[in-house]
Image 1 (tube, rainbow, N blue to C red):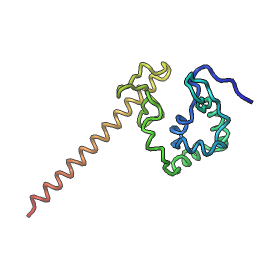
Image 2: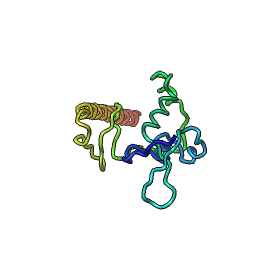
Image 3: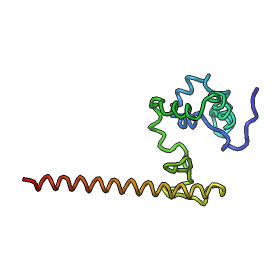
Length: 164
């Protein structure tokens, strides 16, 4: 049964987008259509064959069907043990317009390297600000530790040179 095509393109995920998010190549998805639900072909106004696309609901249902019996730990272990895939190098930013906040599971709207917390949903802003502060603290601790190691190496080589 064909599902109605949603009116907003933000509720759709095309094959290249899905492949990039999954760390796969679009060719892999083409070679294994049995892995995915029946795609839609939304009209884009461009000439030629419309691209394959899936609603976010279809993708969420697929994920739930395949992982329903797994614990959070099992999901994390399986994700960590997956062998690197060819398209992972192309995943420098799978969500353009957002930046992952280190040490958290939050994303902050970002443009040209500038975080735009005011563009985040209002109910998430305080959590984002707290995560950004934690990220700055972790970054400063990392930099401080690197400076200390550098000073220690420098002192060690200076001491070795001065010994007869």
